Image (tube, rainbow, N blue to C red; front, side, top):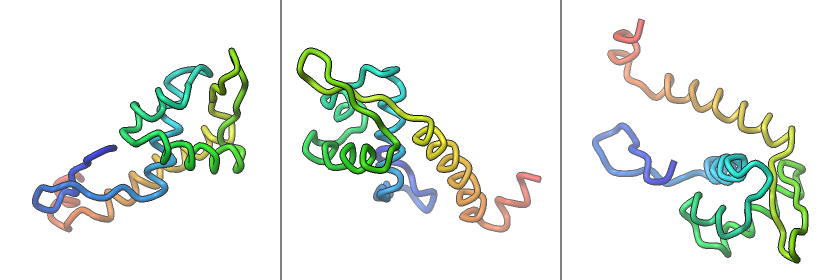
Length: 109
């Protein structure tokens, strides 16, 4: 997700907040209930302070859960968080189809 091509002549596109939430959820999911904030930060390609804000919002929304292990929090995705990801990827697929030019859409048929 980081540094994605925008499909319009190179360059990268800026990640929207929903992309950031999905990135954090995907990274946490990858660690199967053992994601520490530093791992999430590295995996998402964002500074720890920014990831902390996103994680707090995801916890408040019930998309992540937290547990203390050795005095430090670890994170896991909830069923609701997985539902968010499923919906995110489905919508992203629709948006990519809509963003294609008519010529590109015709070639896909």
